[in-house]
Figure 1 (spheres, rainbow, N blue to C red):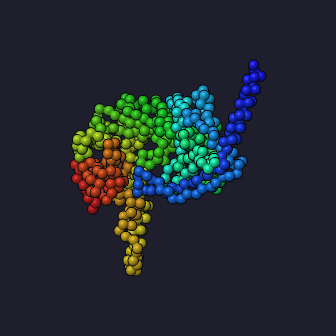
Figure 2: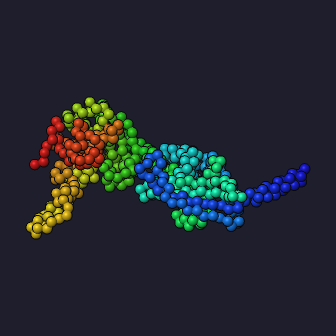
Figure 3: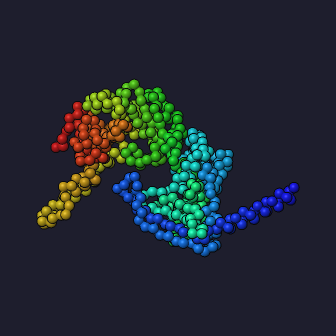
Length: 471
């Protein structure tokens, strides 16, 4: 019985082989369509720019290409096609995590590890990453004004036997190819064949197996980096929970960016959002605590200072009146380790005597031009204004002792994306440093500048909302 079955298999194999050979077309025409970005038509962004065609008549090339085109892929099983074993992933998430290259430096505390192992064991994440990987370079962009498409048409007895159309792409892979029945073919060998025929030099190299898996692990971890930074703060629960004596802890997490809130601290500080009954409903404190060895900067200074800070901020009548009427706007008071302003903001808003001297020298340089009747090709007043921002900040030239006692706070509205940065100064006047959006409080952006985007009003108000003009 086994011998008969084997004989039937051999007969079937040769019959199939003969049928495949019989179906080899006479020729294959490959057309390369080049499209240019039609920016004026959102419904049809492609305009055909160029068409090239190549006719393949060499039998061996035809046979090889048709064999590759016959390898239709199951789109539900693409991971295995590219050498990624989903069963191995589910059963070995710890080993999968070890593939991470470490671009972001995580210590992997218990909360971080539990979270990321779950993400690394979720197969849909890998399917999503594979989809992104294969579709990369799909579209027009800032430096991509052309897209390409290949149409493969086998001819048998003068008639088109089938049609295989690639995706439209600006860079990356040419695949997948779709036949006239809607079947998809993800075959890199076809990409290589076309690249050789048309001398395509920008063909993307294909990763498979472990290398591709490592690529996806890195992407999955980087996609979850914000959550992982938040969870990093669990390493300092003792220090964070010490604030429960005075506050309700709304949230906490490690910060990963530099700039407005973080200067040159070693490592990433922890941001803790705090609330208590002393604060108005839409007011809270953002405590930025730097790492001090294996612990956080002591919260003793905050506990000592916060009542005075809250009272001073909430005594700014024109801002508090606005917050009572607009409950969608929130006010965040910032406290950096042991004071209400950090070095970044001191430098940004005030600069220092060395920088002020550079501005004085710059202005003085124009005096020489005037004396010698040299006409400059640019607007001198505008140049001085830009230089002033660079070297003098808001150009109030506060003393160091004065500005370092300021309190930084922000107004935010999630509905309108409006944001503004303020400093409560030691004399209880308020400096509006930055605004972004159509309005800040009841002031339109045009009250301070030409544009609704980011601008620097650098306007000082008294606590009742009256603008104090520069002398």
